[in-house]
Length: 214
Image (cartoon, rainbow, N blue to C red; front, side, top):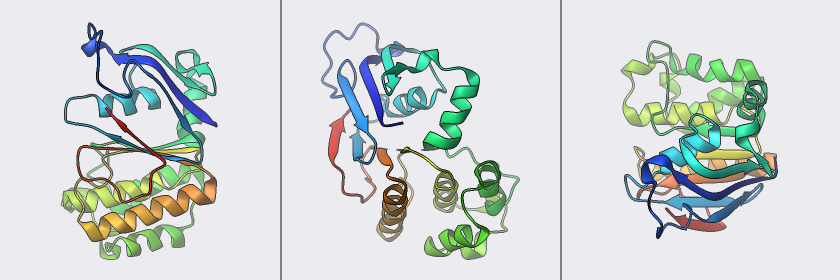
């Protein structure tokens, strides 16, 4: 996948907005593989909705979203599975971890599907993010910041053309923000992937090629 395009896209809940100051909604916006983008927004402007549309979780929007020119509404279930396993790595804002499983078990759920990282690489991520002692801890016992770091590790455990991050550092301090930014940048460069990150204020510290105001 080389290109994700939004063409006159608008969440159904915003229907009737003939004039919108957004640089994304009701516009033609293209995200290219290999480039880094920031979607800055205020709460309630639809950033998580946008991510859900791109990832195929929701379809309650007008206009079109296209992968390499193909309307995503045309994708079959099998094609969506392939997109999520091999083309778009997604970190949702709500994290979607299993609280009863350990941190490493949450990560391995994805890595077993992709076989993309070794156990040593995964443990190295835990070390980088300062939580090596939490590998075998149930997620329910971790702080929200620690959970966010686990979810970031899980996101990086797959091949991809784009890394889609919804408020990836909202619960992290500046030091961990820098570490996450470096991890994401390194992974994107190694795969030639693009990065699309949303934020309502605490931006991940990556150097972006373009910023859009939602």
